[in-house]
View 1: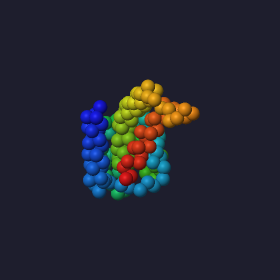
View 2: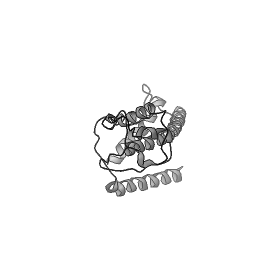
View 3: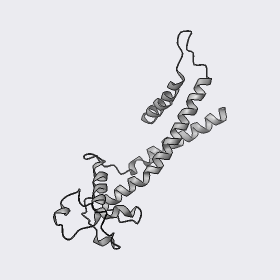
View 4: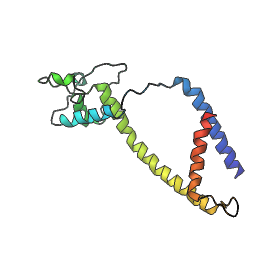
Length: 168
């Protein structure tokens, strides 16, 4: 048991050190507006243009460079219609709900590619929480004769420690 705690403590220390060493290299950008709005705009533009043929040449897609540029990828091609420039509709270039840039399209693809990881992590988190509660139910949680800690609250102790530890 002591060996396991020591190994976990060493890994936690290495994790915290790696976080603080890598912190200067993070790209941080202040949030401007609702973060879900660009994703929703790309999805609506793709739905509106679902009947158009997807071009084989990404050069025929809309690109309005605004600070950073992501190149076109071939994954999730059903969203590529959002960046198609229709030649008969000039006003669509001004509307973000009718046409999306390739960079905004690729940002949406990146977010959508992360959803399976989030869902997998959710399952792991629920299993871990269930395991923690079962362990706490087997523990002696009496502080004195009149007060007993509820087993489900032991998960909050872990969460509280996680919140406090990196801020030391």
